[in-house]
Length: 244
Ligand SMILES: C[S@@+](CC[C@H](N)C(=O)[O-])C[C@H]1O[C@@H](n2cnc3c(N)ncnc32)[C@H](O)[C@@H]1O
Image 1 (cartoon, rainbow, N blue to C red):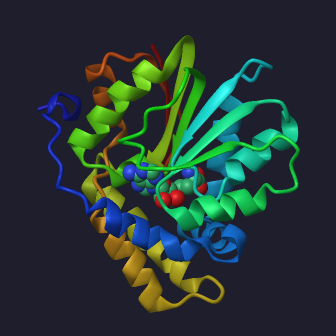
Image 2: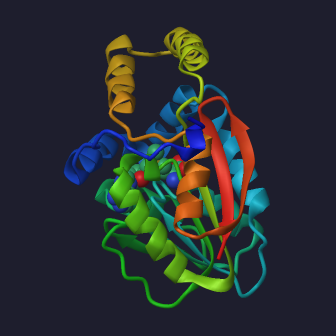
């Protein structure tokens, strides 16, 4: 059977509380610890991924951007440095991440509106021309992903776009295992790494409900998104874009 035709069935993810506890420790040092570790674990791909997300946004003065799982607000920092008048709403359910983001952006005149809340219970005011979510939705179960995608559709303006960057499962398991083994080696050889910490993160990763790129496209299609495009894909990371 074609992978894209298979019914999406994935293991259940950990609880929201466990996820928030996991991310809490990364907020240390104004979020710098998070950035060091995500760069380490994405083995040189993280900044490239953020560049690709930012290049995909069609900025204009009226833009109102919503970031679901905004972490330490480093993406917002990049955006607001270039376009200081954009309205941005940042949502994250880890209070320490929200605080790190607020601290990171204290120097700005126009700051994002920060909301500390689960993206699944969010009821934002107004609509957004751009909704982004990077490296966050893999934390949600398949039913939660569906529920969130339906809400995202209702939060977009008619000309709006949704940009979804995330960790991906490989289509070919053997090939994927080889790449992930090489990645683990690179992580273990990096400066100042604690092997126990690496095991802890990789164990957390094994509990994620990751989709393949095809399954991600299938899910967006099922929720009736249009113009679904893979705008960047490298190994275990990809960015997709879709419209109403
Ligand atoms: C790996 S970080 C990604 C941060 C940022 N988007 C980036 O690209 O670096 C995932 C973030 O999603 C947040 N998160 C995970 N599940 C969430 C949920 N259900 N609701 C809100 N935030 C969530 C975590 O607290 C964490 O800050």
